[in-house]
Length: 114
Image (cartoon, rainbow, N blue to C red; front, side):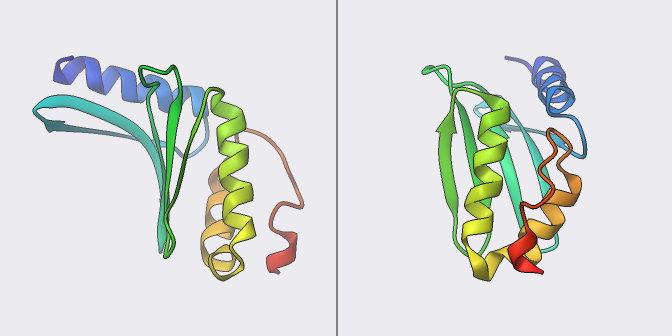
């Protein structure tokens, strides 16, 4: 993959996710890309489908969380639930991320952190 393809793929992934996702492209021997949302003290990164046809979700907070998901939307939902389960992270990360994620509506997701 060349740089232009990586940029196009990153933009397409962000468009599919909707909302505030930002494309990121970098070179490390080859060109790579991801979609990410960054907040003050954390981020969620989604890497493209792997050879196993799964997306890789990587959540950067005081405690790193990562997992694979074959379905993009279900993976985002799982990421939000994983953040919400970490009470010490939820107040500053979950609030910022749920504010930006528009892929689905789940109004009471962070209710326990208020």
